[in-house]
Image 1: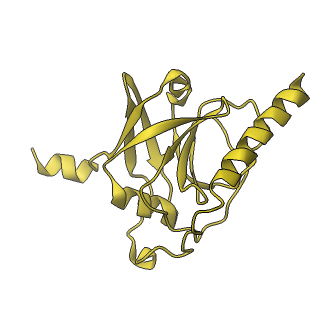
Image 2 (image 1 turned 120 degrees about the horizontal axis):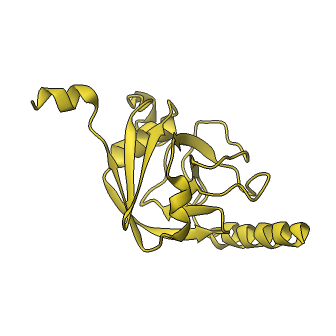
Length: 166
């Protein structure tokens, strides 16, 4: 039974991957990616309906590129009962190592989409497509399971920014 679920999931992900075959491959170095300021430790608030998830970004160029795009309002896409996807308006920097490993709360980028993913379940051993890890939700990612529609992604102010307004 588990094998058939895994095969069904892998087939669905392959179909998603092949659906983007006509798209232009993203530039492996987004314009100005080398000069992007690190977003490591910055937090992104992801809001879908009444579900709110706080994601802490890592030091990758993709995360910095993503942070510079915010705020965004994107449509949620169900990704095989373990992740929610969101298609970005443009590709991000892809000068990072990719992985197929993931965990609940993982936040990553799939360049072929160009899609973001937040993983809310760990029913598979790994993803079928390679992703660039961009951060982690410390809690609340599981609540994304039943969300649909649009999601708002916005960079939270840094503590120094919050204190300067007092």
